[in-house]
Length: 279
Image 1 (cartoon, rainbow, N blue to C red):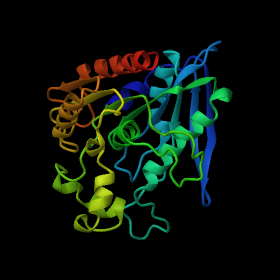
Image 2 (tube, rainbow, N blue to C red):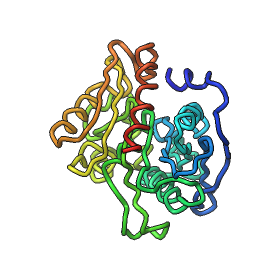
Image 3 (cartoon, one colour):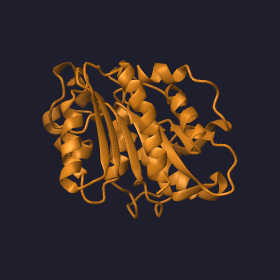
Image 4 (cartoon, helix red, strand yellow):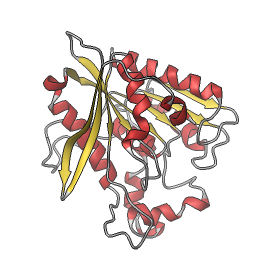
């Protein structure tokens, strides 16, 4: 799959700074790993990299290869931790939606607030995500938290300028395979019929408008975890609003995007993201 392919890459060019605490929620320290590009006199673009795992598992280190590749392209990248839900009723602590989006939005605001320290341009921030991480990345490109009641850098925008999404769910109200219906309760704390508003807030396609960030969509046509209709519908929604984007649907590829054509498209998507953030 894509993550496995990137894991085989060499050590990143530039500097890696692990375990940077970007926010503390209660007794939980949320961390990011920073991948700095080679030294630059001018501020560079920045990208938030978000792991997958159905909002119940996964870790930021899974996305190290993406940090590597973005740093090679002259982009400041950070792989971020966010609070996870769990389907285990015995778990001592459950983190229900919207904890996940709150955290990744906070990571964007943190990076912007530290633009001078990181030598980044706060107007050129993008996001990359895989699966559930792609859903979060798309929400960063379709929604904002500026001037809300948050007390965490409230004047900084959490909206990004470009998004790359790999096999992400775009509409949680429909087209969710039956084996994954348990996630509604696991992630949102109740049965689907009782959490309609939360489900809507998890659906980036419902927020597509003229302000939506340019987007690169990569999805396999044989994906049985997140059916390709999610990517195709987002493609159509972006077209309808005139949002610049690219959509690549890899014939026969599953959720792991294991086909060589998908890996080639991945590298192209990172070039696309770099170029979008240079505009």
